[in-house]
Length: 193
Image (cartoon, rainbow, N blue to C red; front, side):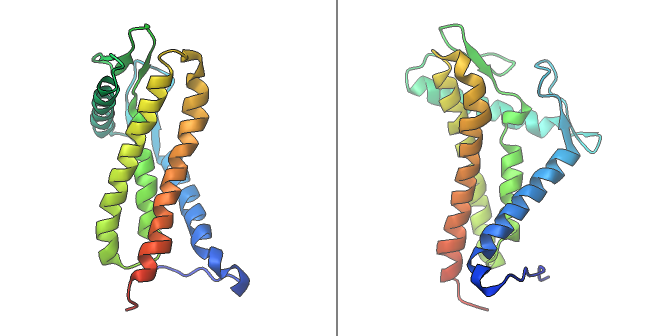
């Protein structure tokens, strides 16, 4: 199956990949927002729905996994953090962060998957690149949470800014950089069919 091609004026042809990246990012995000619902504001609820069907389990598993890996890294750096059964990483200062379903990284993994799937390049190469990219996205998410949790140990009032702006957009920059490696360095080395 061949995907439809975007035709741009020749002077803009170099930007075709970036245009496709942005369109795919926006459409994937829109589809996610239309299809996935969950209550991020209610700290007691972890229910997630895909078109009304409860799909909480994978989100819970991923949030637990991210929380445990974050705990391991923070403690390895001497932060002395504990993790309770509600995925709250608590510092000795009393401050903490809760890893909820939206912190699982599944949305960003889905968006990366869509971007990689609709990018140019051979399917055989994508079968290797996509799992590698998903692993990078997962660990980027863990590092994002490690940074946020570490800084909030002494500066808990920074949490909204770190979470909503710095690490959130940093996450999408990393996804863009992974795509750049694919589009600029891997695809050009592939032999034409």
